[in-house]
Image (tube, rainbow, N blue to C red; front, side):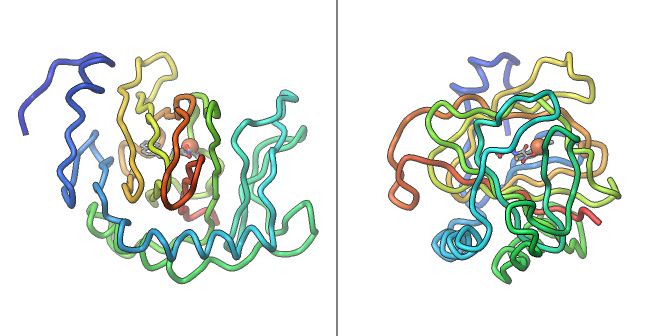
Length: 223
Ligand code: MD3
Ligand code: FE
C-alpha cells in the first residue's frame, strides 16, 4: 500500500477499498473490508429477532442528554446508560428480563473476524446493537466499561455507509476519517483498545438491505 498524506480530505478522497483485504489502521486495529458481506442478510434477520424481544431505544446519558443512536443488546450482558451512569447490566431495564441470547451467527462471525485480525480465540459475551438514521452521530468516546481490556472489540457495519472517526489515546488527538460500508468489519484491541472513536452524522441514503439506516454491531467480552 502506498503512503498517503494526512488530512481528513485526503483520507476521504483516497479511501482504499481492497475487498477481502485487511486494512491496518494502527497497532492492534484494522478493517476487514467486506468480511461480513456473505452473512449480512442472516445478521439482519437475527437483529430483527433481538429487537422483537428487546426494542431499540434512545438511552439517556449521565449528563441528561438523549442519545440520537437507538440501541439494544443481546448476550449475557448489555451496555446501558441512564442518569446513574454507563455500565453493563444482565437484564434489560425496559423488561427486567435477561437480554436475548447472542445469535450464533454473531458469535461465529466475531470469532472468525478476530482471528483474521490476529486475535485468537475471541469469545464475545455481549453485543451492543446501534441503529443510525440520517443525521445521527456518535461523538468521540472510549469503550471502557468492559472488565478486561485484553480482549479486542469486533464491529460489523450493515446498511448505509458511515464515516468513522479514529482518534488517538488522548481525546485531543485529531481523528482520521475512515469510510465504513455494509459488511465491513473493524477489529481493535491491544494498544488500540482504548482509542477515542466516533461516527460522523449519517448521510441520508437508501440501502437495499436496511432502507434509510445503518446498523452497527459491537461484539465485546464485557464480563
Ligand atoms: C474503536 N460504535 O458502540 S464501532 C460503540 O459504528 C461504537 O456504531 C461505533 O463506537 C458504531 O461504542 C463505532 C467501530 C470501531 C472501529 C474501530 C475502532 C470502533 C473503534 C478502533 C478503535 C476504537
Ligand atoms: Fe465505541
